[in-house]
Each structure stands twice: as structure tokens, then as C-alpha cells.
Amino acid sequence: MKGHAARFTFVPVGSSAGIALLTALCFTAPAGAQTMDQLYASAKEEKALVLWAAGPAAAYERAVHAFEQRFPGVTVSLMGGFSNVFNARIEEQISAKKVETDLTILQTIQDFVAWNNRGLLLPFKPEGFEKIAEGSKSKDGAWIAVTRIPIFYGYNTEQVPNNEVPELALDFLRPRFKGKLITSYPADDDATLFAFATIVQKYGWGYMTQYMKQEPKFVQGHLGVARSIGSGESIASFDATASSALEAKRAGAKIALAGPRDDYLPVFFAAEAIFKDAPHPNAARLFVSWYLSKEWQSQTGVYSPRTDIPPPAGLPPLSNYRLEERYLEFVTNQAQLADLRSRLGAYSGPVANPGGVR
Image 1 (cartoon, rainbow, N blue to C red):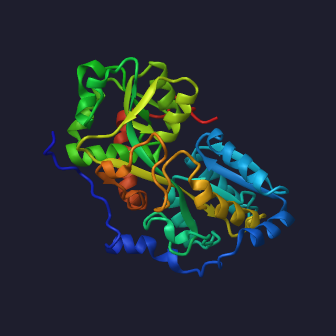
Image 2: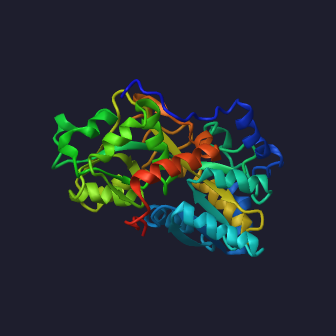
């Protein structure tokens, strides 16, 4: 299958289609950089911040607590959930002309692009904006990546010995993994869709025929993937994120991560955006400035979008792998995205195992 041609292509940034998608990112002049003290003085008058963040709330609770300790008088209301649930609820707020969410962190970057095109976001370039890798931010600062997320191979350390840890996507087709594989639903999660698409691009759609013969399980959310692997219910996946695996491991899960030997390692990101009509815009600016600061990004324990921060302790440098990082181009190609969701959704079926986010 290795030589099979994939039936889709990514839209290059330099193409006319890519340019059309991204042109509107540059139409608004960004707010000037302010010091933390200046932002804090304004944020204290607002007293509150409403943050909706994709993923488990637990992944952000330490940051919220640290922020409230660092900036007393500004209280954060945090909600964790799925990007493709939050985006619809935010659209409802926008339609009702009653925006209640100040700041959101999503992996559905296409929503940020569309909202910015409609003039709904508040451009803001915090200190250190130039350290965020190109392709992970809009030029005007309307949205900026807050984390860099490689999609590793995950495996159960008690049931998969070192000499059987997958090194290529083809390894997941071994008989010993039948009935024991798991991923998120590709039609429900754009990051998982990106991982499947990266494999199909190399091995062709014949890979999916063989993969489905393995009787894989699908679940909603990467935390569900990590928990299933860690419990031994499943034993391997090519759809494991470091943050979910580490959280499951802290709870006692028997899970470890590995990267592909020769295949591409997909890397996506989650980004933040402040809404133009946010009720607490200064508190939102303060949180973004602090959260993206070198001081905090060095403490997150996951990969940072900043180019001046090394990999977290215990995790390998991404330079060890061949990276597929065209996530922005992938999710902003709407025709391709719809086609892949339809085709891969036909394999996985509708969401029947919800959950994965506390």
C-alpha cells in the first residue's frame, strides 16, 4: 500500500486558494503592546474573565489558579469542552448580540479565521508575539497558538513489550492488535482527522480497509483514548496526544508514547482568540500576555508554540521526527475537510462513545 496515491491534497499557503483564505487576517491594525502592570490595572477594574477552553477543564485549572494568584482581584470562570460544541454556542452568542465569552481556546482554527474575516475578533499582539512560529498565528494577532500538539503513538506498557511498539502506521495492522486499537472519531475531531489524513496521504485508502479489519474502537476525545489505553481495554493508538497521556498517567494509567520511525508525525495546535465584544477585554489581554509569556510557557509541561522554549522534560524534541505541520492549511480547506469527514465518518460511524472531557 505504500505506493498508493492519496486522493486529497493540502492547499499550500502560497496558492491562490490559501491566499484567499488568509487575506482577511491582515485587515485590522493590532493593539499596541502593553506591560503586564498596565494590563493588570485595567483588568482589576473588570474583575472577571470568562474562558472557554477546548479539552478537559483539568488541563487548564493549574494555569487558572496560578493566574489568579499572580493577579489577585481578577477571577476566572473556566469551562472545558469540545471545540465543535463551543464554536456553535459562541455563534449563538454572536447571533443574539450578547457575547458572554471573553476568551476562547479552540483547535478548530477555521472558526478563528472565519470570525476574523467577519470582524468579530479583537486583534492583540502580546509581548513575545514574534516568538510564536509562523503558521501558528494570524498576522494581526487576532488569534495565536497557545500550545503545539504532536499526535504520537500511544501504547499500554504492560501489554505491549518494547520490541512490539509500533514504529510505522503499518504496524497497527499486525494481528496482535486486532480488537485492541482506539482513536478519537475522525469525523468529530479535526486533529484526529488530520492524523488519519496524514496516514492516508502516504498509504492510500487501502490502508483504511485493512485498518477496519482490525475492529478498532472509536471514542470522543483524546483523554478517552489515553484512558482506554492506560486501563488495558485498548493497547495501542496512532492518535495519542502528550497532554492527555500525561494526565492519564498521573492517574495511574499504564501508558507511554512513541513516535514514528519514518512516517510523518502530525502536529496540530490550539489557539486563543479574544472577542471584539468581550465584556472583559482587558482581563482577556492580561491572561493571553501571561499565558504566552516565556515564564509560564516554560512551566506547562507540554510543547510550546514559542520558538525559544525547549521541549518539556521527559518528552523528545520534535526535531527527532519528520513533521506534518500544515494544520492551518488543512482545516481551512473546507471542501477537503468536508470530504474527509464524510469518507472517514463512513468507516467510524456516528459518535456512540461520548465523553473524554471533564
